[in-house]
Image (cartoon, rainbow, N blue to C red; front, side, top):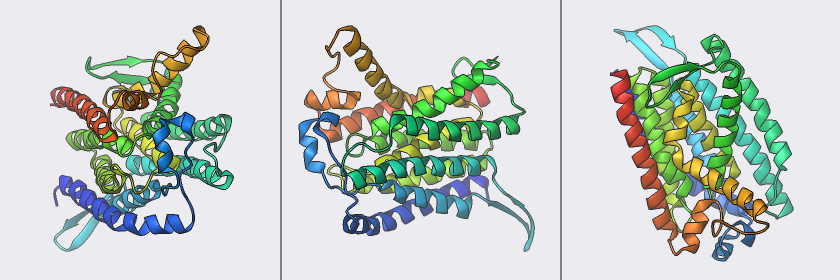
Length: 339
């Protein structure tokens, strides 16, 4: 069977599992009273009506992604009826494990919020500590895999630079930064998923182009899972992913960039995540230097669009379109570079 069919099967498997699993999960979360806690200061006042919406829905696309990948991420080669070899995916499997472990930090954060009936979960220090430990473990694996190379491909320019020890600083900032940037993007119904769809598709196509079938399959599984989740997360949302889901998505997209040996590409295909996080940093900096003034109406930046009159669906369309455009442009460069 051609390699690309594994990605196609993984995509449809994840899509079907998600479409079946999520409507079963929603009433379970309701019975457990795993509802979202909403604070007015975290968003526009009308978000208060979302109070109690089942959260931790990210469990659904984590399960559908993992199960589908385990079914189709191993490639079987047969000669007639005789099994001659089995190739176990190492890079993609590591990214999956890494992402599941990251989601456990989000799960602990969500559970803390639910127990306290408040929107404050783990402290920032606790999150950074746990995330830092996972980063070190992941980078150690990447280092063993590539001989501890400190060179990075500069997207678009197509040159490779050796960053020496600065490589590890950049890598940690990318991982921690983008995991939390994706988390910040999850503030409007359907937004985080809509933005992630083109990113997952980009990694799927790019991995297939450079013959990393296991990475392509994992990306396809993520894509199918996100589409299934979006059916129930589109405004008005019937379920929210929580930090469980956003941490998984964040670590998955940045992990896939490392799996392709082009981690800096996440700065381009993940431009929406980057802008969301950058808006928060700019707002905090401006607030401090002006002693209380605000540059944006509210951050992350999608809340400013809300306060300017954009509906949640319009924001998803606009931000998702920006993500699609960025991924499409970078994909053109990928085809030219690897052709």
